[in-house]
Amino acid sequence: MAIQILKDLRGLKVHVIHPPDEERGSLVEHLRRIGCMVEITWPVPADWPAADIVLLAIEQDARPEIARLLKSDPDARPTLIAIVGYENPSTLQLVLESGAVAVVERPIRPFGLLTNLTIARSLWLEREEAKKRVTKLERKLSGIQKIQKAKSILMESQGLSEEEAYQSIRRQAMAKRVPMEDMALAIINASELLNFRPRT
Image (cartoon, rainbow, N blue to C red; front, side, top):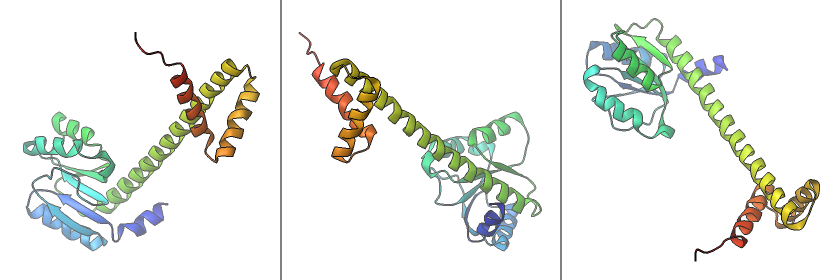
C-alpha cells in the first residue's frame, strides 16, 4: 500500500492555504517537483477546496476563518497537513482541533515534505477505511436489532418459538424479494400501527 501511495502522489490535487510569501513559493515549487497538481488560496476559504491534500497554514490572526473552515462539510474533508510556525498552546490546540494527520514546521524545507505527504495520505486513507467498516458494522447491528424485535413481536402475537419466528421473517422476505432487515422493519411498523391508541 505504501508503494502505491508514493506512486499516487504524482498527480494528486494539492491545495495550499498559505499567506503569499517566499515560503509559500518554495513550498509550491517543491510540491510541483514531486509531481502534484497545486492550487493556492489565501485568505482561508469558507469551504474545503476540491483537493486530495490540503496544506493549511495555522495563522493566529486567521483563527476565526480556520474555525469556520473546520466546521464546513465533513464529508468533503481532504487529507489535512498543518503548517505551523510556533509551538505555543493555542497553536497546538488549533492543530489538534483541525484533525491534521501531519505537521510541517516553519521555516518550510523541502526535506521531509515527501515523507509528510506519504504518511498523511496513508493515515487518512486508513481512517476513511475504518469509517466505512464502522458504518457497515453499525448497519449490520441495526439490522440484527430489527430482526430481534420483529421475532419478539411474532413470538408474542402468534405464539411462535424463536426459530419459527425467524423462519417466518425469512420466508416473507424471500417471497417479497426484500432483505430480512426490511421485512423485520415492516413487521415492527405494522405492529406499532396496530397497537396505536389515539388520545381521548
